[in-house]
Length: 254
Image (cartoon, rainbow, N blue to C red; front, side, top):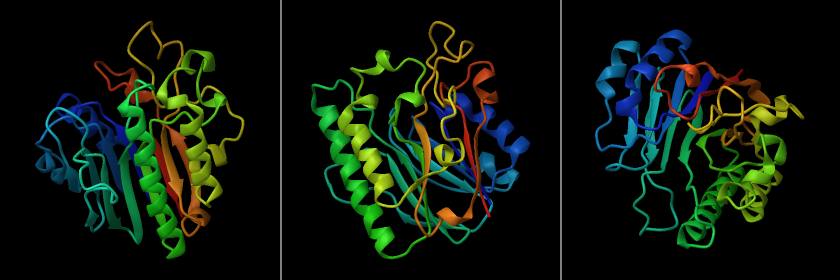
């Protein structure tokens, strides 16, 4: 079973990119983030064999899951804060798995309420993750975490010291996810490997010079981790004309 995740930075702007990539790679499931619009083009993906579920928001955020397998929506918002209206979370059951699509808050600037929201959001999902472990659920959590876990996950660590994505509190929470029993699929299979990134900003030829960061991840619960076969980053879409600043990450499970 192949599950991919891709922050497309506007589904309207990148619809043809996604359709081409799906036709070429044919994952069983694709998680999308940062849709940036109230309308999700579900009909465009049916001819390719994908049904979909989406949570949308005008201009900002938005997540969707496409699947070639039967798809049951379980939750469209992260529990724990009824005042949170951001479209950042989608939980489905497909292919015997609970699959969770996340677009975690960016958190910048660090000295403001957006950073507090980021930490609170991470603690809320941490509670859900603990519940899934307690229930013995096979869970795959994928998406744009907006977390640079370690120095190895960015080209120039000193450039990110004041950024929310690299703050000690954020990285500590991510490590707590792993300490609780979740597996970082990519890093588990590529320990110590440098230069592996999922995001490059649009400035200063950063993609061409591979000056990026790894912030798109797959975490597997203890019940799902034994099925891990492969996890790779597909950099090709980032080289296309008018690309997203992210590129897909692809998980393969037995």
